[in-house]
Image (cartoon, rainbow, N blue to C red; front, top):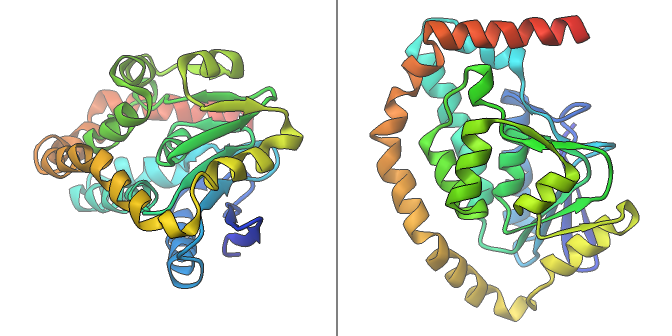
Length: 257
């Protein structure tokens, strides 16, 4: 089912619903692009609020889907996986209208990066986990994502979140600055809409140009580092040690399941 898009108080509210916890795989990537195609075609003057369902914003990459690719021994498959994943994040990051992540629950690994792609982040005050745990499970953090993480969180917190790979409860995530505001669950959507409506539609050009100027150095770095550091990802993701860590994570998931 494609993602739901509903106009609420002058905002396009996009509800991710690819699967129960929005794990990110080829279907998720396709749904995201379909949603943003629709936004550009039918709602291009409106700001965007992106949210999940239930108690999960997004649980990050689909381990079964991704680990099979990493372990395939095919550099072409790994390269294509990363290209598709990168393009979904850049699609949100570069969107010229105000974008707000209404974080309704857990946002882990790639799920948190999806939230960081947005201009603003509002979280519901509930028990949930947030963090970038790619490195401890044997997935090198792509340089392109590091640039987005540093842009959203700053160098110091970005480095801590990326390298330590810890999953934080809400209070610690709030203290580290993952969110611009934390509100009661019943105020999540209305508060996110307030952020999204920070400008009137006649200021869309001013917003888009200012956003592009703010992101210019980041996008230049992404372009440069994609052709240097990220070219090495294929070997790093399939490294023997990385594969052992990935298999360990896969076994943990199977035991919990």
